[in-house]
Image (cartoon, rainbow over all chains, first blue to last red; front, side, top):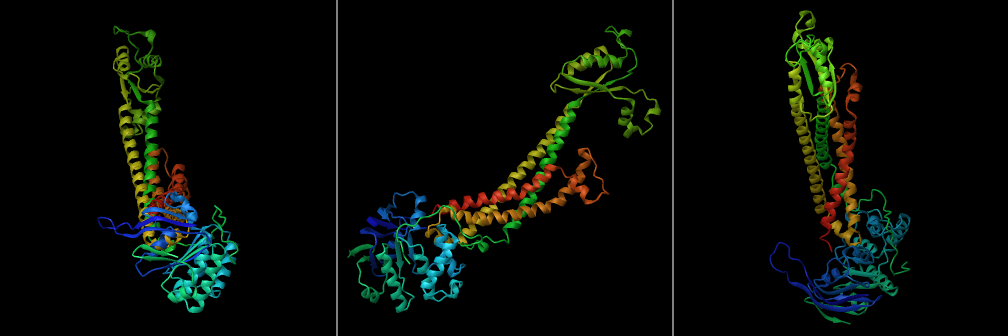
Length: 225
Length: 324
């Protein structure tokens, strides 16, 4: 379960006097386990900031935030890594590690969790085959196309079977067939209990896969239906 | 393939393959500069350690020498001793025997031993040559006195002997030994200070290298942190790299310092009561290095490793605290 209660977010001003403006104001909504939600809104509405709160990259400036049943505002800092391991994230800019092969990038979350190397090898190979990169497991990100990098990023996000999956424009570099395949994967994960939140500008994709949406505008929640 | 979307069991032990460089530290903490700087620090540390050990052993020897802190010279030793009124006192024996008897009866004196004629001419040889005995000089008897109580009142002892055996000279070495010991102790303190400084500079060098590695790998750290890596996990990666580089540097510094230390040990050997035979090759020189120096040379890589590990751990953990 993910719950926002009157959450506000203000980034710390760096090298400037005074307080930076609040990018999110009074956000309140609840996502039960296993739901699929679009996150929609114009550029600059605060979608990425909302996702950053969900995957614990920032802490709310005010209000209460509960992620997967843990009150993040009150939880001690050392308890957060374990919580993060249950959250998969697909970044808009992929954020792959350039000095690691596709295999090692996808294996990274499993190794951080301390899984046995035999299981890592089997899972990662199967996952890369599934996203159509079975022949490119030793390629480095710079040797991969944008779409291939995005698929590596998706594989890394779902390899741990997370309880919460957060994706920021996950289909931006995929062709229609690949995007369709990804949507099927996300729906399947949500059916199996993962809470899935996908931010996108792709109206056609949303139209093809109707689902409840969180609507943001100017840092405010304008709808949740 | 997504059999269970619920919480996944997590083991505490990391089974990550060795050499898995997820943060790219092989380049961010490069082997170009850090080992050389640490080697230079280790070299200086070796010299400081040798200075410390050398000064300490000199101080120890001089202090042990100050156990015989007193020489008593008795002119005309074979003349009969006198009574308090200045008349010869045949019952008291010779002047030297009387002096020895007085010394033996004084508390705080461990032993009083008359130097033999041979020992006396040894003492005089630098000034009078080997034939001093043939010159038939009126030499005093010299009594070497070892004190058991270093604070014994030597002035009153000198006065008391002077009354019974006029002309006796009581000479204390304590002042000189004290000055030399103070000098050695100061040298030792300087060496210790230099060692502390070297340790501090080495820690600073590792900290600077670690911080530059942190800035260079900021994005990778954020990604790994976002994937659920603990501070300990990230700090361990940096610490492993810094420890390796510092150990290599420390070992190199120790090896570089070895010939210098052997040379210094050769120069210092005459003062430490032994001479290094010059014709027995390197092995004799190696054997001439005190064990403590060998131990501290071996300790240098270990010390460098400890500095590398602790500094990297501390620096990374402090830096990570800014992350949520």
